[in-house]
Length: 189
Image 1 (cartoon, rainbow, N blue to C red):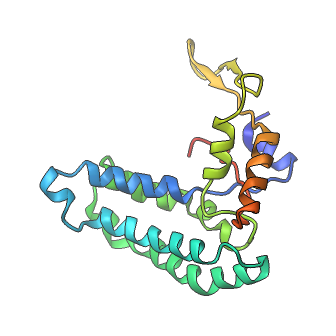
Image 2: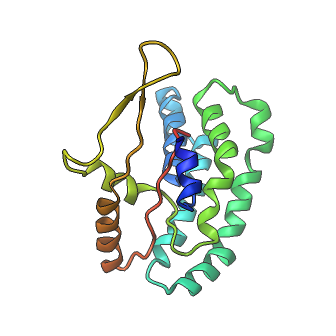
């Protein structure tokens, strides 16, 4: 069964990761010549816009779910709409093969998944919590590789989520007052 099929069968919500998007804009900054890395650019603007969303999340993380959702819709939704509209003109002047083009393409391709956290106050703006829990899994927790069918000699990685580890991490997070739920990215987006 494909990872997407598992998500449907288990009624999971596939959410995007704003941290992955932000990292792509940082990579675009690093790809600039050294003197231009310190000068404000479109890549810097992408990071700035995403940082505004993280600021909203940090300032409201301890709110009850209904209040958090209301604030997200009032404060984050207009910023998200602006972030989505921002690259419309930029995409015409950006090489798709460059780092900035890659960041913009990721933003547009992942958009429906990136904004899902707005509608569910339990979801986090990124998948960091889930990814950290998976990385911390012990040796017996799902590290399987299965023979691939895509090309000879390749292997397809079996996605195994150590659910107890994610739950433990979410519980630790909740005790600290950050009520965002763990979300798992099921494709290599």
